[in-house]
Length: 144
Image (cartoon, rainbow, N blue to C red):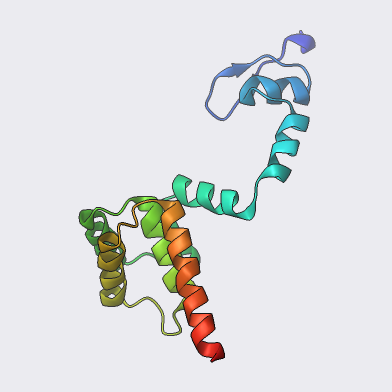
């Protein structure tokens, strides 16, 4: 009877593999070795893009400020109404949290969101490139 143990995965389906390797492959469709190799192939950009696409803007607010207020919720909804996708909003919020010395000023973030929409920054990749260009301009101007 010991050999017939059943293990449950996170999504509650029955997994029949006897070894950790068999169970991992049954759940994920690849071996642990294949998964490890893929992890080292990912660039920091890939990791950040996947992070922003797989989380919601409130996670970024909570990560930087430890709490999400009603004003934060309204801000995110306003940015969504502009037409910005959650991933782009997350990049914007992350950028503001990193570069702002005074914290997140909602009116400023809304204005930045309008500007991003006007500049047609509608994907995470475009948002990352825009932030990099802005940082480069800032760095170049401060060196002069």
